Image (cartoon, rainbow, N blue to C red; front, side, top):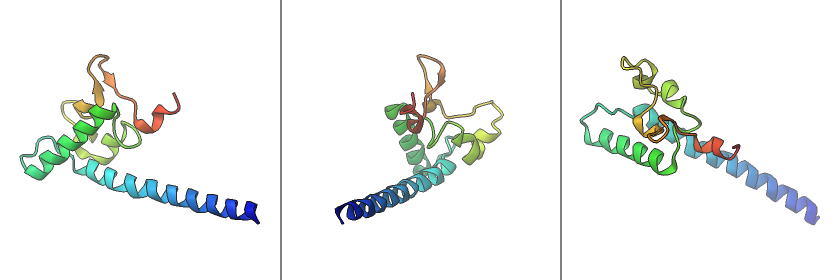
Length: 107
């Protein structure tokens, strides 16, 4: 009986964690889509600053990977300057894209 209860609780916890991850991931991708470094709108500037601060602080790029910027944001999909990610994604000491948080555990 205790084993059955433990299995049920484990299943509930795993289902909740998976659902929680998607509940966090989805709004992040939505906000990534709205990132506009050229905007003069206060709300847009706040979003840009939030993303830049987050990526610099956690040394990451995008939600799942740096490719999110090209996939979800038109500015980086076909940028005439050749930019593929925001400057906050880059490690200035190495001149390279930072490793996404979700992939750091596999290093």
